[in-house]
Amino acid sequence: MFYLHAEYKQHERLRHYYRTAVRFLAKALWQMGIGEVFIGYPYMVNKSNGNEYNANIWWFNKIINWLGDVLEEYGIKLSIVNEYGTSRQCSICDMKHENGRVMRGLYICPVTGIGINADLNAARNIAKRAGYKTPTPTKILSYIVTTNGVKPITPMEGETTKPPR
Image (cartoon, rainbow, N blue to C red; front, side, top):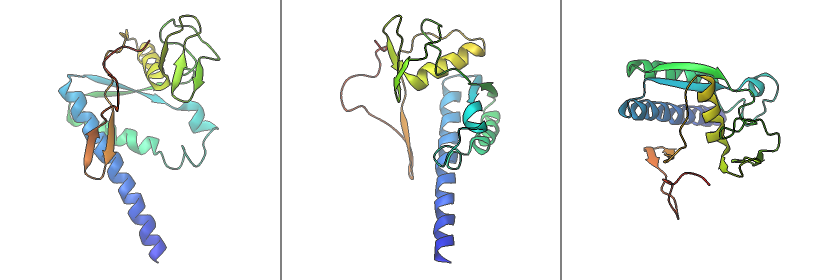
C-alpha cells in the first residue's frame, strides 16, 4: 500500500512540474508577442527507438495537449511539425552532415566550423520547415522547473547573449 502511495505522489509531482513548465512557457511566449508555436514531433523515437528514459517518463501527447489548451487561452496557435532529420541538417549552411552532432548537445558544422547547441540547431530546422527565416540567436533563455515554480538559470561564467562561434 505504501508503495502505491509513493508511486502516486511521484506521478503527481511529475505532472505538477510539467503543468508548471507549460503554464510558464505559455505566459512567457505571450509576453514576447509570439503568435504561433511549432513543436517537433519525435517521429523515430515514438515509433521504434523508445526506451524507459524517453517513452515512459516523457508524456509527449499529454504535454502537447496541455500546451495546446494553455496556448489557446493566450491566443497562440500550436502546430506540430515532423522533426525527422532535423538533428542531422545544419541550420547554418542548410546541408545534411552525418557527423555534425559530435556529442550530446553539440552540433559543429564541418563546412563552416561553427558550433551550435544541437537542440537549438534542430529547433531552427523545424522553424525553417514551417516556413520561417531563422536569424542567428543572440540570447538563449534557460530555465529550470522546481517545486516552487520556474526559475531562470544563471550561467556560472561568461555571457549567454553572444551568438555561438
